[in-house]
Length: 313
Image (cartoon, rainbow, N blue to C red; front, top):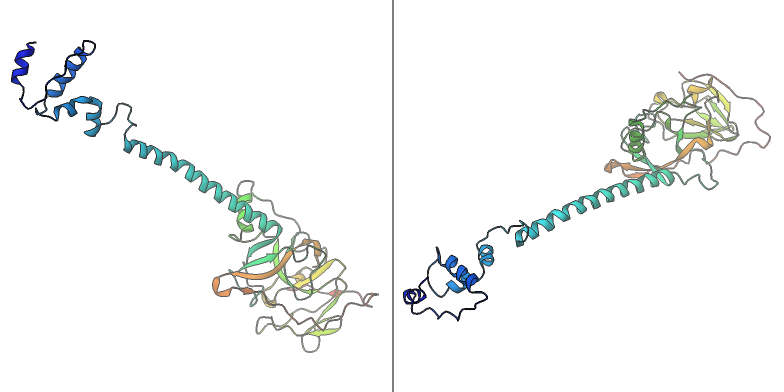
């Protein structure tokens, strides 16, 4: 190439070329030629041709590795952060569910009320919170308590078999109050405890416990204490239970002729219903009843007559 002719054709305002370096002469000449093709002559030529890789970066071209640009770096960081974020959320959800299951198993368990047998105290669709610590440390159910119990062996002869796939899921939902309880779980009011004699009814249709008449203000208006007469002595360690909606309740009266005579073992009691937590309009505690305050303790030697009664239709 004729270097003198090349110098005379350049713009006089352009700076003079530096002395050629023998070690880099070929590379520099190659850069200058490639830089001048398709670019205007001028002082900016030196900047435009100084670093071809830099020019591509300025023009927004993708780097050969596809991840060296700022946008790629940000996108990669976002992509990497999305995975751990979802995992953290999932682990947090699992931990919360596990905590609630442990809480419901040992401390307080929600139950969904599926029927009207305890109206008006508990309505269909109410979710109650059952205090599992109420009888955990030596205390026992008292007359007037509203309790949840497992009726296996008393109200239900055999526990129904669960589906091995859906059973655990349903049990977990029931433990969180999201599904109806097991068919073996019941909620009733304690009317008689071990040693009590419970009789229905006196001349005015009232229940007596240990010879004392009981006024029951919690009954559904219009219901009688019982449509069927009975006279029972509650064995020690068991309970006689009835629903507040007596005409619609299947309770101890229905199982007088069954093994156990309709009595519920104390060790089958899950806990005491203390709170109504849903719906919001019904947030309240389950009211305590003073109906049995005047009932005396059973006689130390037991009642003189044995139990007798008939089934409740």
